[in-house]
Length: 388
Image (cartoon, rainbow, N blue to C red; front, side, top):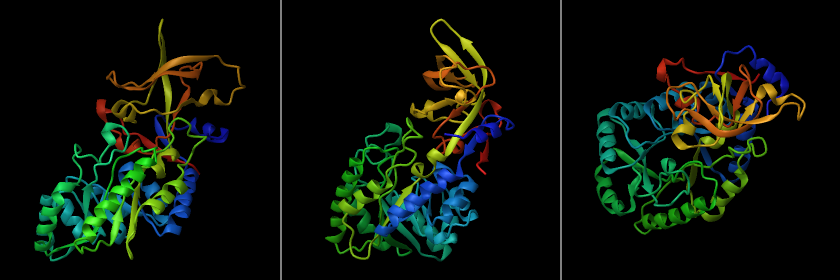
């Protein structure tokens, strides 16, 4: 949690704002590097979690590649100095303009999700006079056991090529001379805390690899996606995921062919815990059954609770440094100012008696927080500040 001097520095910053603890970010990156490098794994950072340029500059410095899901994310990665040879472009709906731009940049690979997409990339590569490297994103039909909105590896999801389509795709692919098949891509979902889901993915990937081996098709790399979850309930107690257990599981259960590389695309696990949304209490509205703490931040700054019913730990910073037991604890619905009933961060939160002007910290907001902010209700865009 924040030391007192950090809290005191917040007094002069207009709220709401995102605060990023860069030391927390760096320590997480050190752990990722220490646990992935012994296995020879290549880790890409998923920009969709947080494309903040300050964060990207730090991530790049630890040797991670970039996983992008839009043309503008590819541009942002290049602006931040990522080597195009370590940029992967995924996404179920790439536009012609985005594909052309990425081909021109010479990115490492397109993760392709349909036969029609393969045909479009081929056509645009021919037009550019270049060859595009591609990986097939295959839907493994593995349940990630996470929220239905962030499950991506089932047949009912829009992502990837289904297993029953593989035969026809591989029959057609040799005709697309400007495409070079170099990999297979899998991604089953996000905020996965049960590692057995990843074991299931490994076993399914082994089966699918066997299908290609039986047809003498060489695959240079396997991209197993990301999705490793973080602890939203106890952010101080469990500040970092168990990266050792995560990478060790893939080392144990994924059958890697000779000369084959294994790629990961972590996002949330890299940045979630380094970010906090700091907001001020505008009003306390007391009722017979419910007390409301109305903040100056809302779904325009952090939409996850409304969109995913997600949990975030909430602290009253203004009361954090007072003697224990000196302030009574009351129960509040912590809500925002937006004209939507869904604009609620959490219900029935036990906090020290809270007053107008108190600073509130909404924790574990470094991933899918600032990046999903909007100007709905013509709100000013939230700003970001960083640890020294």
